[in-house]
Amino acid sequence: MSGLDALPPLREVIAAHGLRARKALGQNFLLDLNLTAKIARQAGDLSRCDVLEVGPGPGGLTRGLLAEGARHVLAVEKDARCLPALQEIAAACPGRLTVLNGDALAIDPLEHLTPPIRVVANLPYNIGTELLVRWLTPPDWPPFWQSLTLMFQREVAERIVAQPGGKAYGRLALLASWRADARIVMTLPPDAFTPPPKVSSAVVHLTALPAPRFPADAKTLERVVAMAFNQRRKMLRAALRGLAPDIEDRLIAAGIKPTDRAETVSLEQFCALARTLKP
Ligand code: SAM
Image (cartoon, rainbow, N blue to C red; front, side, top):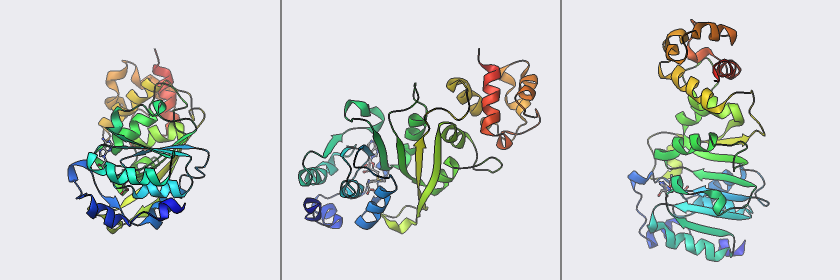
């Protein structure tokens, strides 16, 4: 790891390359390399994995991933100003870091990486949820990734791991728990970042299940859940009226009271309902 140890501190890197944080790109940087190594460790043993990192910025987490032994890291960064700093890291770890200047929403990781693949990222908040939903809803399962270790605003992290019965429970929790195990593994105060965001953050670790927890057609389940939570205060017989004329019978067949609200319905019940609706 001597190559990495010889790199300058991140504050110097940021000053040398003029990397003033841009809000529009969700730039809140992690400058403490002990902390970034700790985040990298939450992803488990990376020595036999390729890693996709979205938004490496000046490379704090990238250094953590490489220091923790990742076989190969693909770092996709939209902000071209960060590239020279990232190239310095690549030069310190020959053959282990590929830097791609582009939009993480537009790349196909399998064009660049060899499975098994883990995703580790301090995500830009503006596209974090969109990326997660995309990774949780691929056309085929299992997905390209083995695990996702992702930083979110704490409130979003709590929605991902939420259980039925509370305000945080909804589409994100159901999509996550249908095909993955999800838990919060770290929480971070605003002052862990430069500049500090307004709210606390949390790292969520998701592990892909080999198959969905309960059988259901993916598109039907996504539709039912989206409709149910679009009108989360309404009773399900009203919120889901548009799905089928006999929705009350289908709800009862799935073990759900038609007067229940989405918030109280378990994943197993939503899957049962989706099975009654599949054409
Ligand atoms: N990983 C760095 C760290 O922990 O210090 C930076 C994290 S910062 C929260 C998010 C990073 O994502 C920024 O560097 C930003 O430029 C980048 N970014 C924003 N939108 C992106 C996109 N669509 N594709 C790839 N990177 C993006």
